Image (cartoon, rainbow, N blue to C red; front, side, top):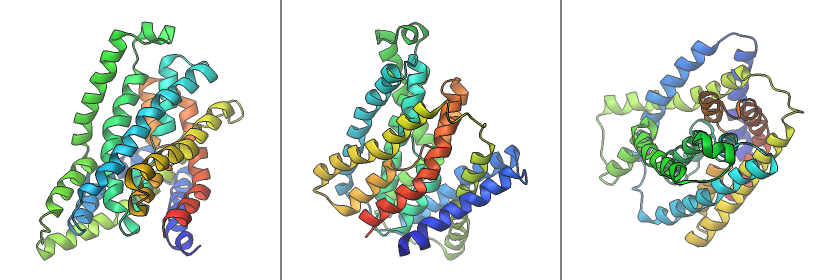
Length: 322
């Protein structure tokens, strides 16, 4: 209960402030984009880099955890796509949007502030974000841009597979250009040398980094308030399947695999489960809108999942947060 009151509840109250600002039109889309650009390009990369160089060096013991998460993703993507194809009768591209929304979690703005506040969870969580940046966005892009002829038939083909692997490789390149992922990798490397920064630079980084979490959470709320209104009754089947896959199946699958691969190490198991238990990310809506698939469904799933996570995240922290 103490962890919930001191860590989790304040995060959701900040999200609530963003919802209020958006609902009453105190701030709009332009302000949301500006704040998002600031957090994504400056505040969060600085916070991540600062966190790494002030933390113990990352050891090779995190590799089994990263491998477990990778295996879980490889298993979940085809299953979540199959659910979209067979249970909802979606075309391939829409099924890809369903799978992406079922797997891509709000790790940056919601999960990262939590992980960085729990001793030992920050570095493993950040390394999982590197894996997510490469695999989830690469495969998600490939599925949502599936070749038209293959999409119409809901089948696989040589061209489709070539596009799939091509997007994974290009996803790896995009992940390395992501300021947060790049700062995590650079910080992890430099942390091996435990550098001491000049006091003015260190203080500046502390102050800028401290704004990352609150501003990012506020942007989540602002974005939720501006999401298109949907008929939740009509979209209930999609909301149900995505919620079960994202908040139940993926954390359980990942937790089981990581448990086996790490010998049940709580410092690695906790971040892995937290990473996969994040509600669907606002990025799901951005990608759905960009590729014009699963638009309304993604918006509804993000809204409902964020609300449900107010219950599920405290349970996870109570079980694994110590």
